[in-house]
Length: 121
Image (cartoon, rainbow, N blue to C red; front, side, top):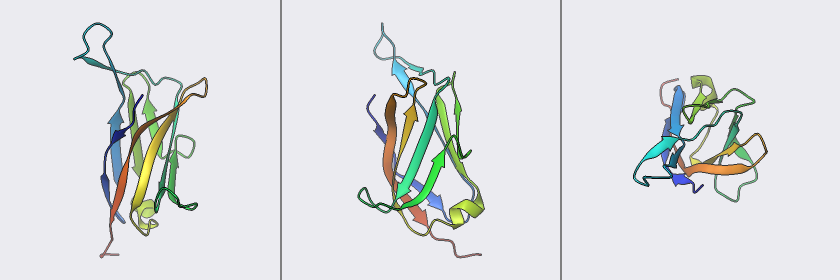
């Protein structure tokens, strides 16, 4: 599985939701794609200042309820409340990894995390 690139923008102090669909190529017709069954998978996402930063700006996981997975449809949804995005202080980079029930890790997407700073508080 090769990770896609998606640069996302978040408005600080606003509710944030993004949904990604993991797909696999059809075995017979390579022009057709089907949802990848993510039943039993977990997911994790970290936002950091840059790839080398040791501190995280935010951490989203299925365990902390900030990522949800719909297994049969292959969807991974990341979400933060307005209060949670208000705590993010700067732009950075992110990636999302899924972890199979047998603990195989696959990065599904990565990119820039652009933060539009809040003015109205």
